[in-house]
Image 1 (spheres, rainbow, N blue to C red):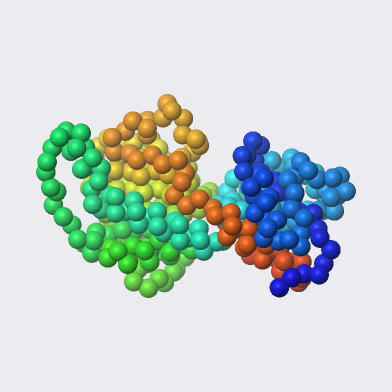
Image 2: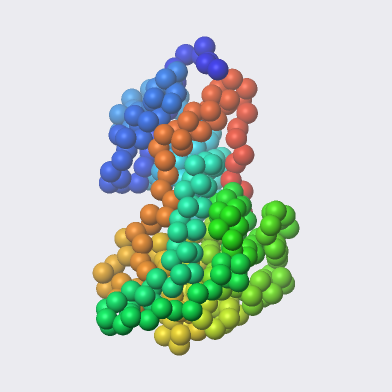
Length: 319
């Protein structure tokens, strides 16, 4: 469906030095030819004065303040905790990206790295270095319990991929969820019961005041001896010092970490050299510009025609 409205200038604002601004402008323009998509630096004063909606990728808040009529922003990222923190107390409405392609890509990554741990690839890699020929005891997937922290769109997609591979799957969320084939837990009181039966814990939670530092000594101690961790959420959810101690004591046998409190991960950090850590460069589920642009375009077209905003972020919760 096409709008007959006069084209509007919609800026794309990103973090300083972001390398893919023009690629996003091009993808967004292709997805919504009835609009005029420009980089913020290319806006005229007149366009800035009239702008009511912007598309953002962790922008400089000072630039948003140069848009006096701005009512809402559409992030091209699923995680918006940095944007919420940067904006502080604001009446600006924030829409985050909800993209089925992103969920599919994340589910693929969760399955790949769960299999990596399940089939004990780190142990076999160590044996290769030692020139040690020793098959390890095989554990069927159905006897391996993988638990997901977070049962939103990403968690549900990941659960389905794990179920199809034959794993026993549990999932935890703040509020009650029901996912076919998954043993679901909710609330703080039910978390220990899930952790106690977990072989591989996968974190897919958003970063909020409630989840910052959630994976700490107390939580890790509730996992069975020899458990593993995959963090594909946000680095600050894991207390690094506590994880290091759990790895050193061998209570946790391996951690797959795609996200860190500081990114890129400084070369001086302990994770790089630790024999029981796999470091990934925040690559588990990159945003697909084409599918994301199509979703942003659909949301903006609906807004142009009806004035209806997509679901906005609850600032208090952070997502």
